[in-house]
Length: 569
Image 1 (cartoon, rainbow, N blue to C red):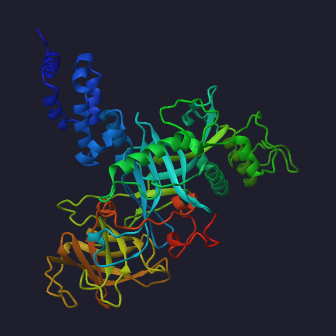
Image 2 (cartoon, one colour):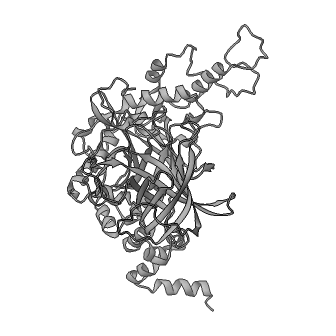
Image 3 (cartoon, rainbow, N blue to C red):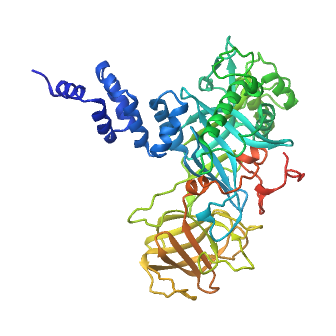
């Protein structure tokens, strides 16, 4: 007698592929992979382009018409689905850094067979900036998908001659990643020049990049980027994603150029992707000997020398005897040099890498605590608006009332981007809605980056009337709370009473009770705004600064002229 499992499998095999494709909408990509492993007969039914096309839709990161467009440059929908699941979905969202204080917001979105990071520049906008899509942005990085599903990383930046692309490796993307790291990756060459040993085979005793001193990490990144950079030519400049005014053929041409640049480096113009030449070097990597010459280390370095991991708690001086006792613990300077040597000994070539990982992060009022000396970006959780958290998400707006009406003498106003989140308040024993500032468009910062512009008691509606002329506007609800105000210095602003007024679920206004200042906010979809293609693309900073701007600054660092002496590294 046939058991239930066998009967179910036989029944499944009788289904036409079209019918199974419809059923697969209720399955996940991992479910499909598990079915493929059940046997050759089921694999023949399940592992089809029709099924994987449906799974690309199930992932819900790009619409169907874009899925079909992307299929042109890739071997199968299965490969495309893997790229959407493993690369695009984990990275899409809003990433931030603490500096500069005006805001450092990188919006990661689908490009064209790629995922791209676009920095939203602090700026002033007109009254119809959302409808018209007139927003300034700058490229930060992109990850392209090859025909076989392989991933290629490019960092954007510039040198004295103009904009550049810096090719590198994708070293891992965790599904729940919240930290994006720019690093230098050691690689070991095998007998064949084009076979590169994965960095994951690193020995336990070798020092990872993140454990090096900050100055060493900065120097290594600057040296590698200076060697692998490739100058940008049209149509590579500013064409990261499909806009309403762009031709799809232009993006196909651009992607072909990027794939050739990633494979052949500076010789890409004279090469074809189909060529499988044995390169005698890797265009994305720097030779260890050349790298060592740049470092100009004071300690003698022997490539054959056995190196020992040194930690502050160890008492053995592995770097040789000095005037101090043999039992004296190594100094911080000695540890730094030993760690550097250990890192450099772990590879004979070095390249740029991008790594997306998950780290437990504490936060305050919706803003994560960040590691100051890491070349990293931090992901802000963006919750979708649901019934009990209807105002959650990204909002943008300007000071002034009525909403969308600017005086003739002031046609543009500073843009503010706020992340609205819900939290349980221990002080009031109820939920509060927090509006965290992540960007402002003033010439000089007025509100600290990552601070709460307002906090209101969202579960207790207020009966307070709108304190200024309503301009015939109807308000659905209002909630009392506090808004940011001057306090004990820039880093510790105070707060003063105010109220949040709801015009619609997509339009809000917060009013300070004492000053009657009003900030009006609209819900934003940055992908839709950028894809209108009417905004302007601003030239990027030098590569490491373009990824993570380390120095505290209170002005707009992203629109400085490249002729400014302080602009270059």
